[in-house]
Length: 336
Image (cartoon, rainbow, N blue to C red; front, side):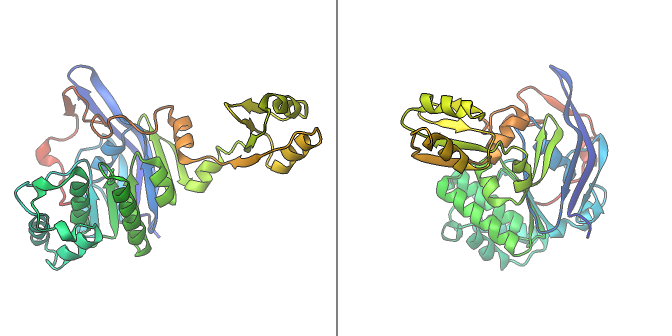
């Protein structure tokens, strides 16, 4: 079976009037199979949004090959737009329109049955607010309206760029449940996000990008396995004394504020036995498993949660940026 998304050797350069040419994506590869919920991660400026925009034909790539749903992008993308839903960057809506009217207009323009409007409003939890004007929506509600617009076509592939941006914890959970239900129904989801704990809960595969290059890809469990240090958190009454005993037994020990972190063993019983034989009793033994945040930090060397997500990502830096690809008139567009 052909991959739903395949990118090979993607390169994209922008020219800043202040700083000159800047490489946003440099030889990037991405492979997404049907049925996956695939997390796409990277710090601000790493090339995530530029990659998605290039994939959807919104900017012209300098080099590389891309396919979406079996057709080359962007040249043949119009053939599959009816099977594809996407949100890239913060969507804009008419504030005087209601959510229902907004989606109804999009449905009519896209040749989608209007009956889908109530269905997608219900899916994203906006049915009760569907007849309110969008100008009264919170940022999180606008995000959900954007997801609803992407779902109008009942797509096989859904591309979401920071769908949980602006959502409160309850909204984030609702978005997580929605993504899972879509995946269970057979929709392939490519999810770009900086909320790493959510990605770990939702996604089965992940690709991490840094400075425009792929630095890790694969099943989430397989990626995390490469960062397993076989460490155990140890709680004792006298950490300093216990640390000396464990070092004498040949175990690497790191002293934290009120506990020890012991490495070099997958068997917590060895730690308990070593200390117990010396009359030191353990009150806590907790194996430490790597999480996506720690792997992300080590791979990219950056903050896991950017202070200003999205606002300075890729080609949207503060200074003026010019696309070195084709002029706007030649850039492929799609209804998302």
